[in-house]
Image 1 (cartoon, rainbow, N blue to C red):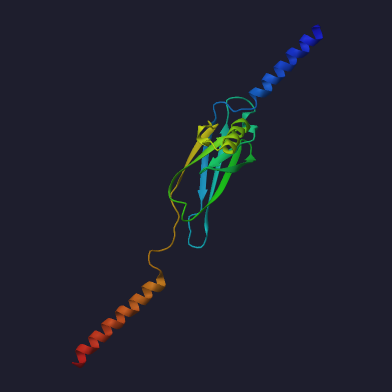
Image 2: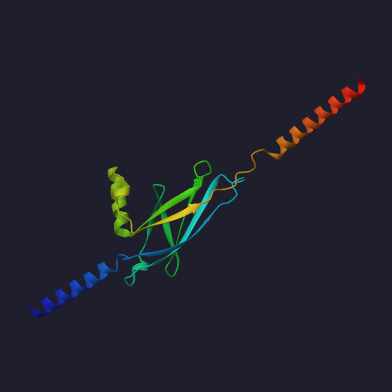
Length: 171
């Protein structure tokens, strides 16, 4: 009987310590953001967010993470000690300048997001582990007037001035 009680206590303590390590408490996130700056020859804008995650509990940084960007789920890749990366693409017409929110989830909250999606409910009701906001300044889409059109207009203007000047000299 005593062995059963001791085994139960050890098992409960192990379960409590495991459940405490399966979530990150008080997450501290520092981000670096990269994106396509020249959209003249591409069809989509690429976004990459690297971040470091520090948790107040030990081992909380080593858990798998998931992200939601613009209502779509994106993978989070671990690239180093406490370093993660999220990347996604958007069509040029849809990728406007401004702030993008990246909601980060642990396994438990990600399961709640998937459950809400299957049920057709709003995923914003699920509380994320943390939210990262990045600023996209926009991408260069080329000049307002293409050089070919500008050259054609300039040739037309020079020809007009030449013909007007010639007609004044002849008359």
